[in-house]
Structures are given as C-alpha cells and as structure tokens.
Image (tube, rainbow, N blue to C red; front, top):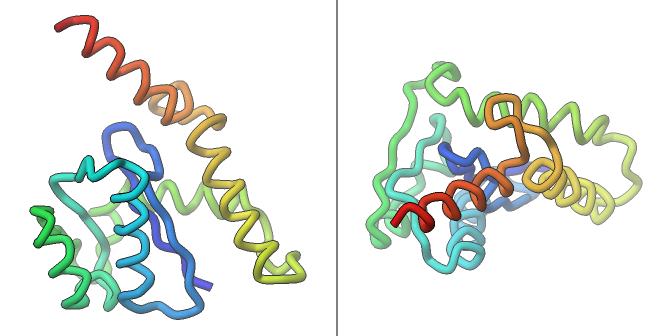
Length: 147
C-alpha cells in the first residue's frame, strides 16, 4: 500500500492524499486531483517532492504545469531537502501504528483517513502550537481583519 500526500508548507495541513496498491502516476494524479477538489482550485504555486517515478511521470508533471504549478524535486538520496514531508511521515507512522493489525484493506484506509484527520484537526503541531487547520483559520482571520 502506498500513500501520497500534499502538505501545505506554511500551515502544515495535509491538503490531499491518496492511497494505491501501485507506486505509479495514478497515485500522485489522484492526490493532486483531491487537492483541487478540496481547495476549490486554490492552487499551490509550487509542489516539492523527493525523486520518484510517480512524481516525475509525464502525465503528473503535465497536469501540474497545465494548472500553472511549478514542480520542484530534491536530488536523489537527499531526504533533508524535504524536511516537512519527512517529519510528517515519521509522526504519521507513529500515530497510525502497526499497519499489519488491520484485517482488511478498507480498515487500513479508514485508519489512514482517521490519522490524517486527527493530524489536521486535533493534533498539536510542534512548531505551530496548534493543529494545522486551526492555524490556517486563525491566520486568514487575522489577515482579513488587518485589511
């Protein structure tokens, strides 16, 4: 099972995610498509990823570029160049627990959903001192109030 996420680097919110039994472009295209639906086409300016076939697949890159998104990729074997994603996944794995404990694929996917929802809405982010969704809402409320 493969999980792909798109995380807002400023708010640390998981904007979209997708799971697949295959590590291919359908995984990443599904993730970007979910972000488009979730955010109402409030598109990111950049997408930064580690090296990987699903992320440099022509269909994925073409979709992102057609939407005006710039693709940025770390060099191979350079996980420190994508620290937010690396940090997220290390916490995600701890929060999810042992994935072998699920009897069905559906149970695993539900647990992934619950874990991401918990992270976005209830888990205190170390840097933000609050959950990412709360941080985003407070930030934009302050921004609107200052205009």
